[in-house]
Structure formats: C-alpha cells, structure tokens
Length: 467
Length: 161
Image (cartoon, rainbow over all chains, first blue to last red; front, top):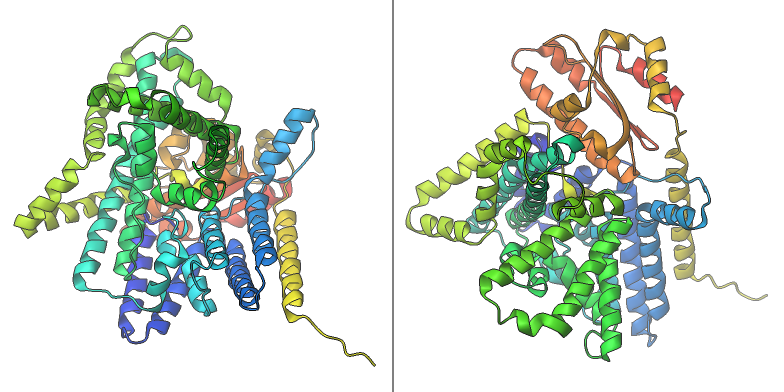
C-alpha cells in the first residue's frame, strides 16, 4: 500500500487513527498492539507472503539481541552471536536483492547460461534490514539495552510510517518512544501539515515530473535533441527529490500523528555547493547509518591516506549497491566516492574560493549527471544518455519537440525548482504565524488537488520501491 | 547414566535457521515460471478466450491508461474494452527484473482505484467487475484482468507459463 493512494488516505489511515485514539493514553500496550496490527496489514497489502519474512526477521533479531546481551552479562564478548546475526540478516537481504545480480554477473563473466529464478523484492527489505543491523550492533557495543518485549520490537521494525521508504530509524533513537509517547494537539496538527506537504510533493510534483521524464525517454531517436535530454535529466533530478523527500515528509508526519519523532531525512540537498555538502543533506538517515556502522568501524579518516581512500571507496560502492542490484548503481556510488575524494584531497580548497553561484552550478551538474546512472536501466543506456547531453551523435541542439516540452512543462519545472529551496516553506511558516486561515486553506487545497490527481491519473510510480 | 543437557539457545537457533531455509525454499519454488514469449501467451488467449472482442492497445495507450513505459519491460499484452463505458481489460507484463513487479502492481492497483472512483456514482456493474479484478504474479510476469469471467483468462495464462 502506498501513502499516496486513495485507499490509504481515506480508508486505512482514518480507521487506524480512530482505533488508536479511542484507546486511552494510559493503555499504551493496547495502542502498540493496534499500531503493530495496522503495520502488518499495511505491509501485507500487496505481498501477503513477505509479511512472514518480516515477522521472522523481527523474532530472529529480538531473540539474537537477547542472546548477545545474556552472553555479555556472563562475561563473554557476544561476538559469535553478533556475527551469526549479521550473516543471517545479510543473507536474507542478498537472497532477495542480489541473487539475480550475482547470477547475471557470473553468466556475463564466464559466458555461462546458469538458469535461476529471480525473486520479487520484499518491500522495504533494505530499510528494515538496516534497522535490524543497527539494533544488533548497538546492543553488541552496549549503546542500547535489548528490548525485552517482542511486541514492542516487532512494532519498531514494522512500524508502517517508516517501513517501506525510511527514514532508517535507529532503535536507540525511538526506544523511549516505544514505551511512552506524548501526543499533543499541536504535534498532531504539525504531523498532518507535514504529511499533506509530503503528499503534494509526491503527487503534484514528482508524478508530473516523472511523466515528463518517462515521455522523454520514450521518444524515438528522430525526435531526440540535446536540450530535450537536458530537460529529461532536470525533470528526473527534481522528480527523485520530491518523490523521496515527499515520502519522508509523509513518514515523519505520520510518525508525529502517532506521537513519534523520526529524524529528518532531507535538508534541501539541491542548495548544496559541494558534493560533501550534498551528502550531508540527501538521505541523511542512510548516510548516517553508513558512517556509523561501516565507515567509522573501518577506521574513518583516522588512518593513513591510502587506507582512507579505500574506506571511502568501500563505503560508496556499498552505498551504490544498497540502492539497487545493478552495475549502474555501483558506478553511481563509486562516482560519488571518487568525487568526495577529489573534493577532500585535490580541489576542495580551490572550490571554496570561486563564487557561490559557480560552486552551486558545479554541485548541481555533478548531481544531475549522477542521476542519469541512477535512472538508467543499465550502464550502456546511461552512457548513451550522457553522450547525447554533451553532443555525441547526430542529434540537433533543439527541435519542435523541445519547444513543445518546454512550453507545456516550463511552469512545472520552474515551480519545482523554487520549491526545492527553503524559501517557500519559510514564507509559509511566516504566513501561518501571522494569519492561520490562509495557511489552512493552502493545506486544504494541496490535499484536494492531490486527491483529484490520485483519482484521475493512473501514473503514480514510486522510485524508492526497488530499494 | 550420564544426563543429557539440552542447550535451549542452540536448539532455538537451529530451529530458526531451519524455518528460514524452508521459507526461502518455498518462496523460490513458487516463484518459478517458464520463459514463454508474449506472442505465445497471446496466441493461447486468442484461441481459448474471446480476447479479440477487446481492442489491442499500443505503447502510447499503455502509458496513458496504465502509467507504464513499455521501454522498461521485456514485453506486454494489453487489451481493453472497445466500448466507451466498458471496463474490461487484460494486461500481462513481462518485467526485466522481478523487483520491477512491485511497481507494475502498484500501477495496476492505482488503475483499479482510479476506475472505481470514475464509475462509483453511476456504474454499479462496472464497479462490481473492477472489484473482482484479478492481479496475479508469477516469475517475471504480472497478470491483470477485469472481465465478466476473469478466472477463464487467468486459467489460460497460468497454463501458458
């Protein structure tokens, strides 16, 4: 089930909220049970079989964390149990996500034709596996105590607001909230506003930008031009931001409605002036996860320069692979690894001296080209696309198709670019501070428009599903 | 006689591993499907059902009605009712990677929701057909059908793969 669907917005969510708030606050256990049941129904909506995998994962990690804790209390290190748990979690993830990729790679390298059955990816498996891994590692390193209640742990792992697209919520960040949560009318209202903003970003902006990008990709060669492909790349750049940050906004908003506080996942990444800054602002929960559970244990930057370079390349190739089981994702990750190394060791100091607008253009160009690797089905397609952007092939600079696309989509692109900066939200907050009614009207209009779009348009893709 | 000591913790881990392996084996076995060309499936549907009473749709219509870009898939069959108020349609998509099935399914479900909303106030027959829609995944295929007897089409599809 998607947040941006009629069934979620007008059936599932109101029923769950009603059931949740009918139960008095003092019966937190009953509220947790309601949230758990709702989460399992939400998860099993499209793929009922994989709900068993989710329940299994919850039980397995719950049990193993207690084993590690018990062993440590007896004076042991808990290392064997920790490694066993990591291996099983990663095995499950690899079995569903990377098995086909591995077989294709073997067939490609050896020229063999080994037959295999590729499996459907359980929704959100990359997100909940990383949450489970952070829990196990935190228990192992004594950064948190294990959860004694299976109900609360299963609820944490399967919590529907952040289940299918993050943010990747660390157990220790919400451990207290599993026990008790404060919900005020103001917090609930903030959650509703945040959710509707996210819905608007996803449905009104991302879906339309996605339709534009898909239409450009579907053009026959005779209608392709260099500027058209630039429009396609810009559309995708904005689409992925509004798609994913919109979903994160909805998750954070829903969390607030149920009394949770999740970490922010985006902080206006497209205003960045360097790639280092971009990755501090984009998918923050994933970057934090990799930094805390991989980069720092590898030694971080407190090692020799060659080792630091290796650490960065390991982290970034795995970041790429986390996003998808395909070589173009690995290349996308390595592309950022190399650029971050260059910024740190080669031209970072010079970059600071150029005008801010030039820094911004530099960062955005790199990010947009990166998205070509990300959006393409394979490396050949990505390289062809990038080639066209820079004049390879016999494509004209612009044609009638380009003018048509610009004329019909200019407002959408310009509006999206403006909304990807902090200013519109700052203005909205200022407006709400001075006058409540216009703010409420804006929110209401976004909800109505989004609903209308969901009813009358069947184009509602979700980019982060495949992760 | 020596006393047998049972290590409950170890037994639980072994049981958990066994459960996982059995589960994965079942999922893997059930996900298997033959690699059949779309034209063969279409031929079987044409000979065993009245699919030809519907209109065969092209790439543009696939995008327009289902929100699916044909370049992302290995093939598709899409037939739609010829009548303006008809909701009958059959879609079979063969994806490149099974992970793509989820997004195809979302598009299909979105289409069903959108059609139900359209016909809700004046087309109870159409709504009833839409509520009986079949969405079925096997291997790299997704089958979606809205028709008077969707089981018939599904049976032919299941048999074909």
